[in-house]
Length: 78
Picture 1 (cartoon, rainbow, N blue to C red):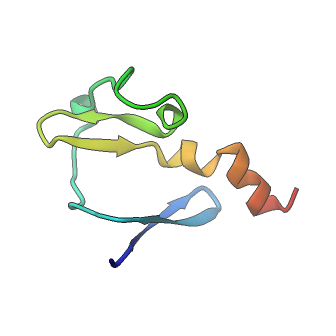
Picture 2 (tube, one colour):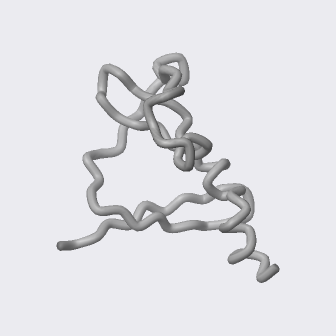
């Protein structure tokens, strides 16, 4: 099974997220993002910006991912 990488450039960092599947990249208006509260497990919720109901897709919060405390340890070495 092949893995896919999604590259994010956030602030001064470039990150690659390795995922099993990418269904596509979509442009959307920020108003289209629905609240996703209660749809995802608590440990994932901080990294989800919302849900795109019409597309049936999740909108990730790239800044929240880049600022995750666990990732900061890797990036800064502290």
